[in-house]
Amino acid sequence: MMPYDYDLCRKTVTLYRLENGVVRRRQLYGVHYEYHSKQVDDQHGRRQETMSLLVVPGGADIRLGDRIYNGIGPDINEREWRHFLPILINGLSEINFVSPIYWEGQLCHIEAGRR
Image (cartoon, rainbow, N blue to C red; front, side, top):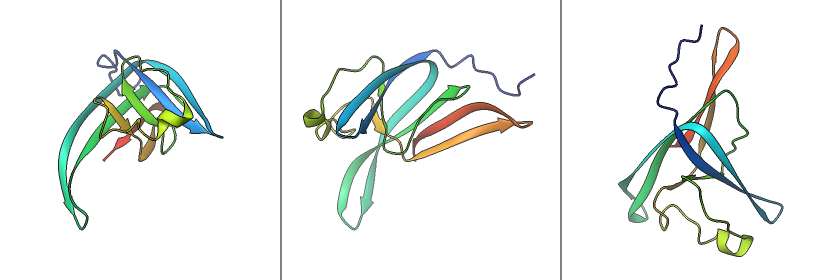
């Protein structure tokens, strides 16, 4: 018996990865994804930043720098990648943490997102 309830994992997201000059795109089904924008003040001034949490039951190949789009995302190429940014695209976030979650030695899910 797993200690987690995945009833909220009903969304589809698109994962993007720039790898060797090629934008790789794939859908992840049956996940939970939430995001929101917040205003951040730092030494560079004031800016909007997207915070997010992605929960993928089981395992998934998710890496730092991957971008997650809410729903089925568009095809983009390497030239478009530099403009495919969370600040410009609603529902897009860039991964800055990945945490596998285990229970009794078994992988339950992956948590990833931006804090």
